[in-house]
Image (cartoon, rainbow, N blue to C red):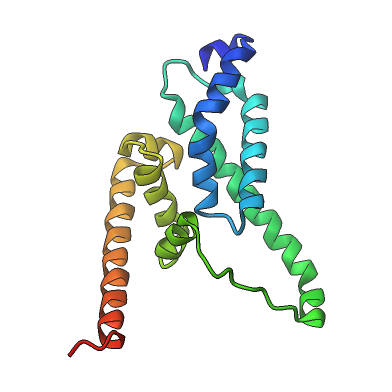
Length: 178
């Protein structure tokens, strides 16, 4: 990242190739569609390019990237909410139902598993378990304390355990077990 700041655009290519898959997974897990995730990834790299001068070389780079990605996602969400609020009348007039795909991809499975979690809990689980970030890095990326991250993770795990056990209990009842 320090080389990229100094104007080495080959270093930028290396960063993009190395970090894009992680950032894309971050967006796919929380976006409504893959197209949105692609757009968010592109917007993140544009924003990183604009603000690359703000990176401090003595700090870890991954939390800095995820903080930017998080802000891009929040900005996109706010824009979508504003746009949807204006377009709601058209949806009511057309009443076109969305079709659910027959097969869910792994990202869709992850999204379905994390659906009961709050946005903050999903985000922290995604950073820790999918991106492989440390508690300290997640705390920096979310502008919170390590204690707060630990609390979110604990509550997320508890909610996930409850959801999974409820699914297993439902499957056991409908599966013909006695």
